[in-house]
Amino acid sequence: EAQVTQNPRYLITVTGKKLTVTCSQNMNHEYMSWYRQDPGLGLRQIYYSMNVEVTDKGDVPEGYKVSRKEKRNFPLILESPSPNQTSLYFCASSPPYQETQYFGPGTRLLVL
Amino acid sequence: AQTVTQSQPEMSVQEAETVTLSCTYDTSESNYYLFWYKQPPSRQMILVIRQEAYKQQNATENRFSVNFQKAAKSFSLKISDSQLGDTAMYFCAFMKQSSFGGYQKVTFGTGTKLQVIP
Image (tube, each protein chain N blue to C red):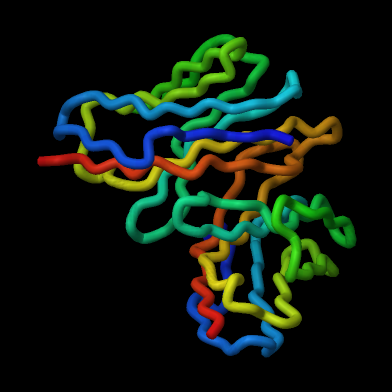
């Protein structure tokens, strides 16, 4: 089944404890992206990647890191999480020359 | 930078009636894509409909259609024959067309929560 998977789906952590949210797609898509969703703010793009080793900042990249070493994986790294990073996170992917994004199920993160 | 505005935080509609959700955007780009996404209580993001800016014809997908007014930078979504399963948050989104294919930055609106009343 073609899909975008995220792990974990739910995570509670404490301030300053490094964490990684994984994102994987099995559709051989070149483009991948991370978003965060907060009440009243909609979805905001954190980082996106156009291909392996090619990444760029979205609108809210502060406090996040990404890497794209393989086409299928695009992990989101929070080196030192803070409570203002409590949010619902979505990963998405898109095939080349197509603009339609396929979204993962979301990861709900709570930083205490 | 692009901005997307959804001025209706919440709306309601009677089952089987028609409802229109509004979206306006601001951009200096001439080539771009516009989308409406649906997010039901499950939180899954589901593409409802998309529109290429270079196409004058409004996109239609079954009961869903858009009114795309490029000069006015308006992109409203009309849902006909509303069903209970249409209850969800609806997001309007803008994507600049990349010269090399695929997508780059994407900007979402803040969403409209639609409630379909039986």
